[in-house]
Image (cartoon, helix red, strand yellow):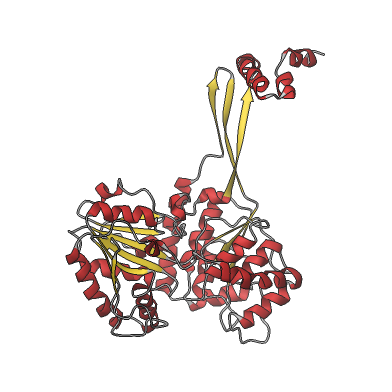
Length: 458
């Protein structure tokens, strides 16, 4: 049986500006399966973006800084006649002077927690284990030589993203860690973002965002260094550029437009669930956000509360949230029972998952796919996004089924290490010789045959 979806305006408004709009209610109580449309994200089909990104990439490759400045004027609406691509020391000082003590203190608090978490996550440089008498095997971890951290700006300012992308790289020991971010109309970088960079110790910040920024660190320009890897979330333009340039730069964790699922059992407060549903839906009209519950009372309470919250919010963010929750990628999902709600979560594999339940730790054991899992009514996504410590750069578009949050490991490479003593050699060589012969590798076999001792002994 097909699902029943209710939406008064059917997402027809371009940017959620219909004040009478009602959040979607996707009634799956009699559905045999989850409608595929509910699992789609805005970046699911990048074909249109891929074609539009190609000429941008070519321009940066061929023209370097000149293309970055032109795109800054065209795409970022920079109005100053000329602007420096690299942030100057004067700009850092102006930012420090321009940010309030309260914001600076919040940044310092977040940095401390994020650093503590990632220092605990960092592996030891090398470990070896004796797998057989006289035979040792292990891993050695070293930092990647150069990593670019992408910090978006189009729909807001994100010092939090700078902290989340740079701190694990600093903890990992990356020798060259740079930040790329779009300039504002004044040709400058958001002050809070520069303060965060200064406080974590990053000195290289470049004013180039979007596809052109990805191309800049993939190829290098007169000013922007070529990097081996890029990390950080971005728009479909950024995701498309990463995909096209994956032969030139490691694109890192697939992190696109924001998405969230709030999973609520029948003990949850529907109005509180609605409050938390707004968090990721206010990022932009390309976000995705669902409240998933088997309780009709919770669903109805949340649906009733959302318009009240929108009316009290800043208009731009309210419009973003309204667009998402009345459009094709958001709303309230009502399932036949709580197991079906959990199944929806595992199929959706959200970037952020918040669990509002009487016993959230019991529910945790049922969750298989989610980038981040936040437990209980005192752990809203806001806390995870900014100050708790775990990384908030998370896999999107169901990539959480195979990918993980950004971590220290994303800034490191691992080499396997082996060491076999003379005493341990014979036992391994015998079995290696037999496998080499079976697989038809004569050279392999000869290298561990009696010939080896003859050659060694001259």
